[in-house]
Amino acid sequence: MIEQVDQLYQEALSNLKTAESSEALTSWYRNTLGTKGNIQLLTRQIGQLTKEERPAFGKRINEVKQALQEALDARTAEVKAVELEAEIAGGAIDVTLPGRRRANGRLHVATKTLREIYAIWADMGFQIYRSRDVETDEYNFELLNIPQHHPARDMWDTFHTTTPSVILRTHTSPGQIHAMREYYPEPIRVILPGMCYRYEQITARSEIQFHQIEGLAVGRDITFTDLKGTLTSFARRMFGQERKVRFRANYFPFTEPSAEMDVECILCNGSGCNVCKHTGWLEILGCGMVHPTVLKNGGYDPEEYSGFAFGMGPERIAMLKYGIDDIRYFWSNDLRFLEQF
Ligand code: DAH
Image 1 (cartoon, protein in one colour):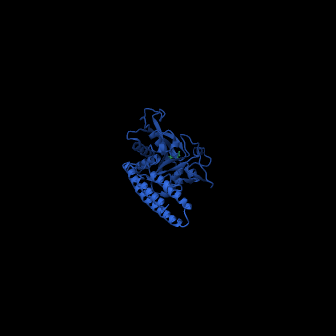
Image 2 (image 1 turned 90 degrees about the horizontal axis):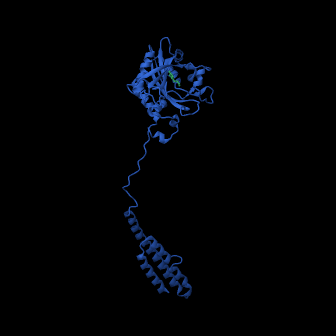
Image 3 (image 1 turned 30 degrees about the vertical axis):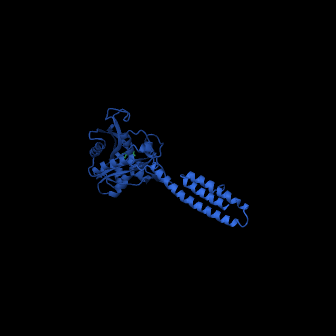
């Protein structure tokens, strides 16, 4: 039987040399060393031997098993190396494939519009004055000449906090009082940008939060002519040197007289289109001469000082400029919208 073991060993070794793939090696293992393989089958025949013959047989079987296992390991390493080389040569990894470009972020369309407006006012000598989003009823209304039961309050329904009289500002106008109280008795040239909040039904035309840019100029001998000249200059820088503007009388509690400024439609140049509702004009801001009561509340004597103020909505301006027909796009974070600017 020992001869049989040696014969099997020689056969298995020569078979192993002809195995050239992982699959061939697997089936070689199954036929040779596996539980139903030839070596295993032969081992089971140990019972047919005499007691004296058995130790030599067992020893030889074990030697052969170990030798075959070692031969298999060596052959496996060879075959795997060849297979890997073939795989690389076959182009499974294409090192010439271009990489994936990383998407760049960008500024929000509202931020872009704000910055454009800041730059124009900075050119004209106005600096940015920041004031808080959370205000008291006193600053948001009272000091701006809008007393408790004044019907004008209906224009600015707001969000209340759990602290009585502490609210989210409905406009940037309360910043006028903060700026005046800080700068008195110096002359003032500031713009006051920031987020405003209103308790409103959200529609295509109105949001519960939006930006405003307020402007304030206070000094001696400031007249309505200064207001008109300065705002006209702004409109021309923003919308084009040839742009016509017009002022219409209006009412705001914190200015007297008050007006609204329209610019010639920037899409149709005044000939009439859907955006300007065929009037040829777009309303872009409210303005007026600072009301004496408001000057007084800011610490400036209205007999000595005067000033003008204005307020505009940058999202509204962006809507007009880019033909955006729904204000809800601004804060709904839809990339399909944001990536267009
Ligand atoms: N605060 C006003 C609003 O929210 C806008 C405004 C109008 C501001 C006239 C002004 C102004 O400073 O003079 O509707």
